[in-house]
Image (cartoon, rainbow, N blue to C red):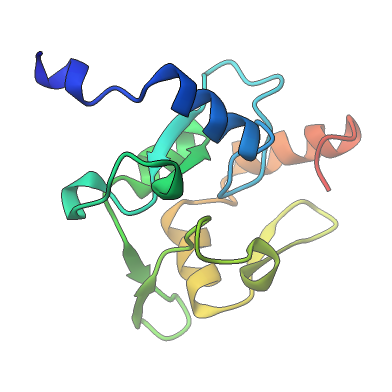
Amino acid sequence: MTESLSRRIPVSLDRRVRERAGHRCEYCAITQTGQEATFHIDHVQPRAHGGATSYANLALACVSCSLRKGARTSASDPNTGESVAIYSPRRDEWRTHFRVTDTCLILGLTPTGRATVEALQMNRLLAVAIRREERIRGRYA
C-alpha cells in the first residue's frame, strides 16, 4: 500500500466525524453548507506529533482553519507572547475560549482562544463575511 493510501481516513470514520461536528468547522464554527471546498478531517494532535487516526483525535475543519493549523499544537497569545496550546475540539469547550460578536468577529476569551484566533486568522475579511452570511441565513449563532 502506498503512503498516500495508508494515510486515508476510512469512509465510515470520516462520516462519523462529520456527523459528530454537525457538518460545521469545529474551530471557527462555519457550516459546510454553501461552502465550495469540502472540509478536512483534522488530526487534533497532529500525526507529526504522534496523533492517531482515531475518532477521539479527529475533528472537522474548514479548509482555512485546517491549513492554518497544520501540524501546530501551540501558538503565541497575542496579549502576553506566551506559547499556549491551540484550541482542541476534543479537549476544550468552545464557549470557554471564544465568543462571537454582533459583527461576527470571534473573540478569544482565554490565552488559548486568543492564540487560536490569531494563528488560524479566524477574523480575516472573508471568514467574517461568511459568518455574516451564515447568520443572515440562520446557520450561525
